[in-house]
Length: 70
Image 1 (cartoon, rainbow, N blue to C red):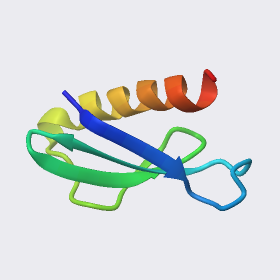
Image 2: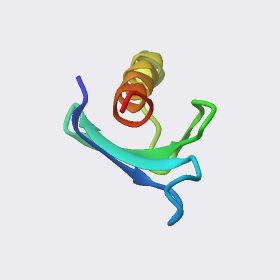
Image 3: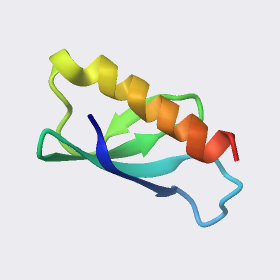
């Protein structure tokens, strides 16, 4: 389960899409960039293939809730 999820705009102009995000999963901090099309670019180490798809789904749902469903 993702904990301490945070995001902030990638650009000073907050109308431009793109966001930095960070969270903890299994005591490991992960960071990345969430692109407007839903792609994720990992800035930190990538999650193991065992958890990668589930984490991407959770990040996408969180971004939909916090950014797009205002």
